[in-house]
Image (cartoon, rainbow, N blue to C red; front, side, top):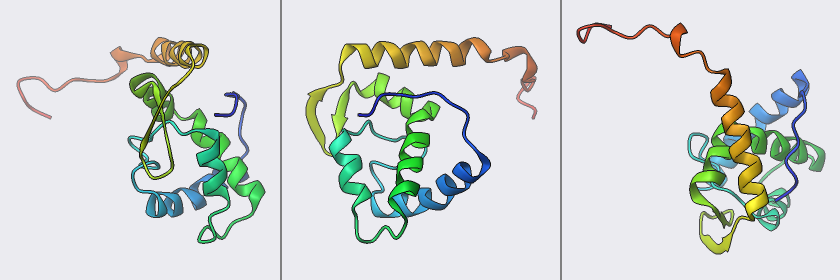
Length: 128
């Protein structure tokens, strides 16, 4: 897994991400399920990048993977699963290193710190 980077992405990078996401969700429905992605080994990303059915440039795929790995859901998956998977969704039996788990747990803690639970109104007496 490539080293996690946190940076601001451009509008064009987000557009590239949005363009590629449905393709990968179709080609690899288990590993690239947007709501429950799996932590992938670097080799899995490399195999996906060379998939002949994925008709985008190498640079676009690189941008997609960088943005995909910064998503909260991906970070949660790393902390939840604690093991690597391949692009087909098969568990590889290799544990994610502790330093990566700690780094991602810190990221989730920062996300949780930013949540404002008071800004959401809860329904009363079952009413919406």
